[in-house]
Image 1 (cartoon, rainbow, N blue to C red):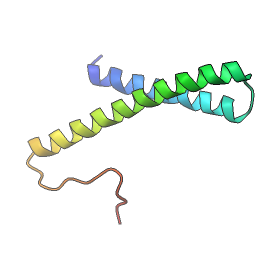
Image 2 (image 1 turned 60 degrees about the vertical axis):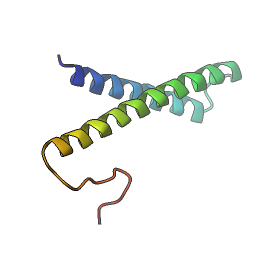
Image 3 (image 1 turned 45 degrees about the vertical axis):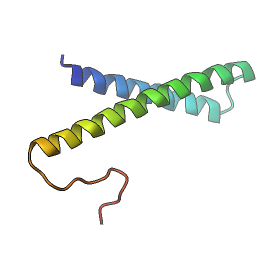
Image 4 (image 1 turned 90 degrees about the horizontal axis):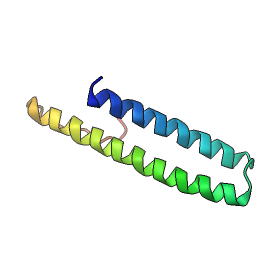
Length: 80
């Protein structure tokens, strides 16, 4: 399995874990101490996901440049 596939699976796994933590915290299922632990874990997972997204954005931009495409599209701008 390629490194790219591993990165995708790691991102998806981290995102699912983060979603689970958010759901647990929103449902009020956790005691205060457990909430703090989950919050800290969630922060780490969010940073990991953000790093993966930044890396993917960089790779997309590199591929666009490599293939001679002049125009880049920012990810945060809606396509009208």
